[in-house]
Image (cartoon, rainbow, N blue to C red; front, side):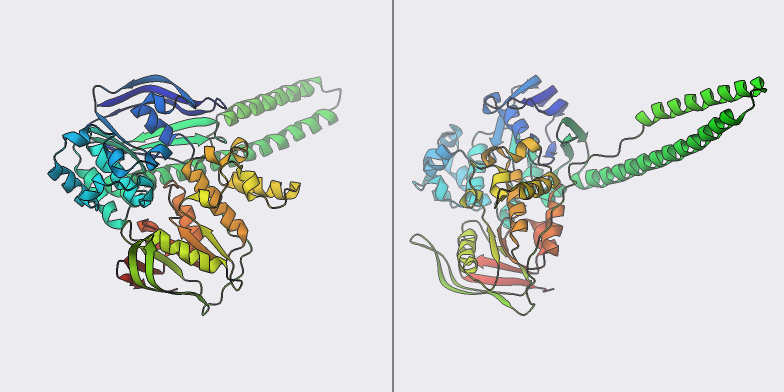
Length: 514
């Protein structure tokens, strides 16, 4: 059992409170999901619960964390660089339980997540694995510890659809407690029985949390209804207050006029009018006090706004991509053969397939071809933003082309619409959360004027509250999209065409073109 009491977490750099007075008990059988916007402390909370030392450089906390002899297994969102440089075998032996686990059990775990058992003993560097393979490897090492409580930070990142389904069943069948962060709404809907919603309101100056002992779908639905009810009540109260003010204004004007015109020979009438004016002003004061206690208009994290600017429309019949690739290689290894792809007009295409089959490699090849074309305006969002983004730069500088005041004002408006604070706009990109980096890159694409988007996991790291907005943005995009994704809602809602990449080539799964 994991228990926290009155936990408050504060950033050391700007003394901003991320979480305030959070208390909960995590019991065996709980499948609790932490949700909320990017950069509001979800990963920091997860690290702190596992080991205070992971956050001591940038955050401080008060309150109690009671682990009660629980054995915690922690899956971090991204591996540290030293671990990436290790061989796979060196990485695995970092966990002492690896030696204690029987080979048959290890092989079974590897097979279940779709990794060859021999890979666990390989001299191959961890960093040569695909993103999904890295996640699977971490899961196996974590389970070698034989934990009773799992802390999983974005376990669904980069893993293929088959492994996603395995992960769902694994979480549901795990007898211990699971506390997880995920952008994958389908995973949340199918597994979570408790929701911890962390929010930063009033321009990220006020920390709020909600704990709900229901599934994700029920929580979202009830929250929407509650917010709509609160907003309507707030509007009604303000409308009534405005009407009251108008009535009082007319009465006050009438009494003032009567006071100005009453005869001096009528002192009794003057006294009555003076008394009436005091009553009117007393009522106005009472209304002002009531106004201060009116229902607040809801301030919500998910209220982000993003749109594409100035992209040139593509004709429906135009060939965007016609690719024939005899072999797809990673070094000396042949990943796939006889690849054929066709994308026309404003088609939204998605490429799926097992981890390690070469989807990201193929997308890079496609990007290289399309970025050279001058009959289209292509833009590429890689899986690793460092390929296209200087992490030492700031969001404002990254987006700026001229540096003039008018442009910077426009950039700050756009960043504000994505819930960036003024401080975050000028913070080094490396200090931003994964979701904030994703939003920043999508904003960069939206300002680029591109009519062809090449996207590697475009919804990766984005909160489940932001993702519906991003999906709608991409669905409405008046151009072509060529993407890799394992996000089931993205595939269902945005994509017209889905190809599965296998060793033998690309197999068309759907062809329902708009």
